[in-house]
Length: 228
Image 1 (cartoon, rainbow, N blue to C red):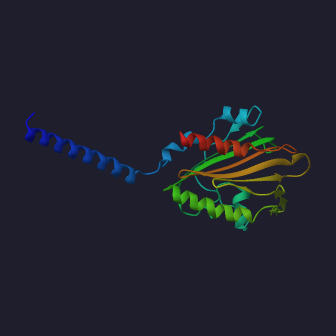
Image 2 (image 1 turned 90 degrees about the vertical axis):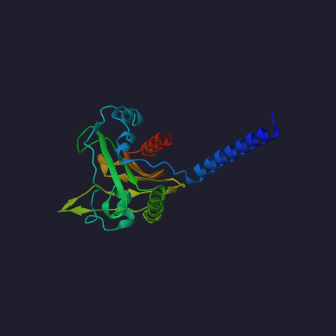
Image 3 (image 1 turned 45 degrees about the vertical axis):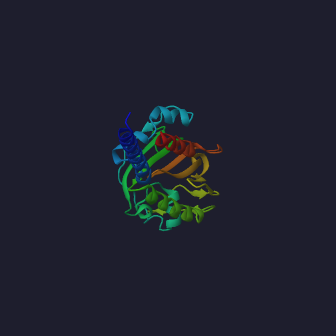
């Protein structure tokens, strides 16, 4: 091969190599974290069959999907406890979230239920926004540990509520609580977790005296599906 032609080939090869390297480096710099779209939220919630298995029961009845925040600040103005007492409270979430999917399941499907789960997922514009909300919630939850909530509504006493100690990791808050009195006492768990740009807000309750970890199990299942 003539020397000039060989030089041209080597030069072209080096130019191609530099171009490919530059593209690869540029792609790594600009890579965006995975963001869950609002349309994907429905598929994150556990099915009725999954709930029956997880709660070790049968007959868990799903209620219609909820897409708007609740507002019970008139009943409990203490914002440190409001977000622990109830999931998806407007006064706690504010205006920063994008979309909500919430579903209640219980067995039997009456006001005197034995097993209950409220599962929800809330999307944010970015992972950072979701983590900011998580950190704010961690501060609030820490101020509601070992706390009593007694509410009288129109002369009627709502179920008594007492929280336990807060357990906290970088991505998950959990707190046990009891509600009700006498035969209607239920042992429960509250969990709030963050994964990607999604907040997972869950409550689970079972008959009294049982150690309840099902809210964390629901949250962990949803987190695992977000990682796939």
